[in-house]
Image (cartoon, rainbow, N blue to C red; front, side):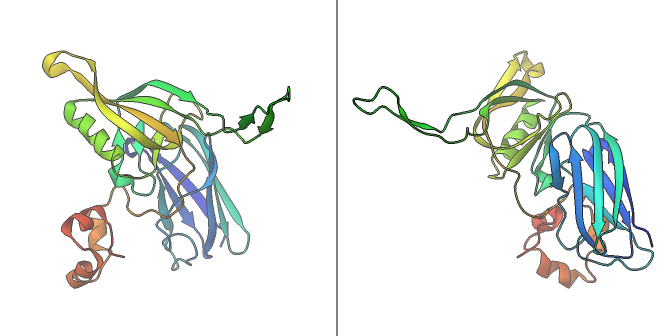
Length: 256
């Protein structure tokens, strides 16, 4: 059987659905977009390294795709490849938690973006020497501020909660190619854009530091519902051993 790959944009959920038809195991699933080339993050053994039963497709969701044209490539154990291209349009900017998309938050707009790139070289000025002695290092990553506007006070509090989780975050936006980035929040504060009583526009100003893309599988996913829960275990007793609390079950956070 020839391996086929299809990609369907789901902009209302800020994700792309990938469907692979194959009778071999996948060894890689890669995305190439405005942010570069990277492996599609999956839940672990649900996509890669398994041979699907006859007539069953492999289906996974990509939560880190950028605005614009995206090329996906699936490679099987025999070295065969299949590609799919999709045009993806985000409906609004997002602050995403890459490994746990459940905690991601949609924004109204992003303003006040600025970025500095700090130098990390060391310059010594020895006595009696005209030229300095320099220990050269590469420049650092971007750091600066972002204005994340939500609208209501409750929505702004939700952004603040997402920033406070202690996870690597991802800015996804629809306006500037290649501006998406992974970052940590150095600090954050509730802010107002226009003070007008009940119509006040609320948001969060955050100081950020750009970091590398986090390593790891998906620990949870958007769209987890009770239909998926029912199909994930044979008995209620199995669910009780898999999830420590009802909240963990609601968010699909399994017990280690």
